[in-house]
Length: 244
Figure 1 (cartoon, one colour):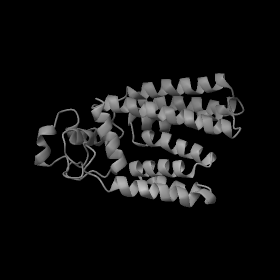
Figure 2 (cartoon, rainbow, N blue to C red; figure 1 turned 90 degrees about the vertical axis):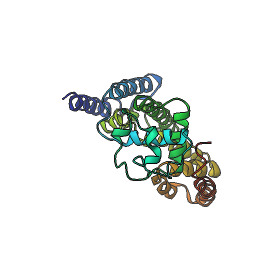
Figure 3 (tube, helix red, strand yellow; figure 1 turned 120 degrees about the horizontal axis):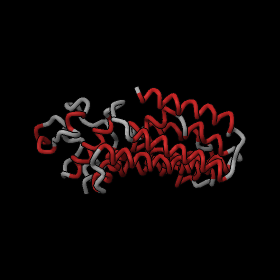
Figure 4 (cartoon, rainbow, N blue to C red; figure 1 turned 120 degrees about the vertical axis):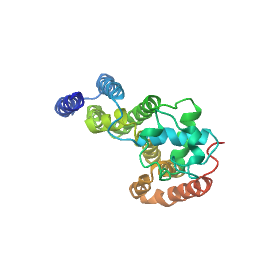
């Protein structure tokens, strides 16, 4: 129904951006790209979260920690957590008898979102959109520093896949993107330790950012890896402290 038509419209706009904005820069171009990106994400936010059930586990894991339990201690289906069940989140959790697969950095994020009062799917989706918009603006900074036309930001900003993953599903990657972009900007400045810490934090949230150390300049790589390794060992070794 409406969602395929909406995705088709965004795809058409994106294709037009490739042709019309390919060589365009300046504040007006950036404003156009970001403004339409926001409109698309707000529209996607209003759609039911039926493309993925991951976000229900995010909210649940945050709820578990706020109640003083470790998310690694028991799966959602455990009777010890029965008092936390409700009609909005618990029925939509996938694989209730399986322990959470999300690493420590993600669990800290879930706990903090819950602590801030973001305990529903719409509120966590809104937080994901805001975080990803920060990442998008940092991407614009990276393009500008490289002399790349800001209009090309539309290739990412108006992507139907990105809009759906962030606006409809609220996936964790939206919170990882700003960390990755800050790591890139730190690498540009030769800030090896900062780059490593940011990539380490991103790895603690989603694991795959570990592969991006291969893209760090060789002269920076070992110090960055060392900083990330210390962070992962210290933080990842304390999975019961997230509710503090």
